[in-house]
Image 1 (cartoon, helix red, strand yellow):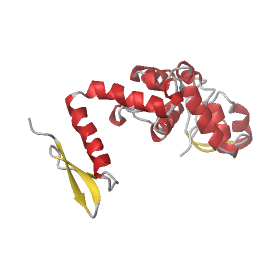
Image 2: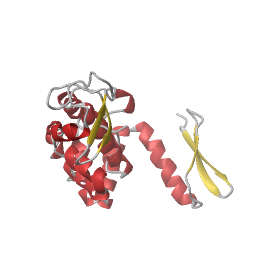
Image 3: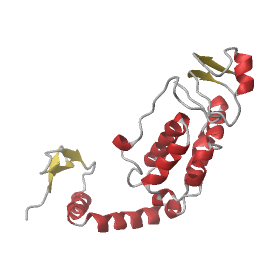
Length: 210
């Protein structure tokens, strides 16, 4: 059986060539032994992917002790710690979303996709939008090996007059949000005046930004 990957060098940098797709990828190393280890890992992954996932998790656990204990609540806390001003306020309000409550104590690396789908079904458009951001943050931080839900499988975000707020009402497009001012356009069930909208908009209301 021929091997799927092969190694080659260009300008002293080693590259990986995928014989199945024709894709070439820089390994960003000039060390031949390091390059061989990387290509060996790729070869093994095609033979026994499930075993290699376990091995990868073991490596991650060694390099990141919190890997097996980090929860989605911890991820939210990390995001909030990076924010300031109105943006921080928005994220603190997101953290109070009741639809996210079952996820906050769930271990990031042990989260079935169904829990995400359940949260989005129970929540609002806001839940979908911010859960995507939370999920992508975890991926960017390498706290997840694989997406909980593949990009194409995420429920479509639908804006407009038919979206539902947490209080059960429907309304128009929120184009601006501040802790004390919420301005709506085309709202059906919210007052048009900013002062009235501000009084109607509480921490339990959904947040959208365009």
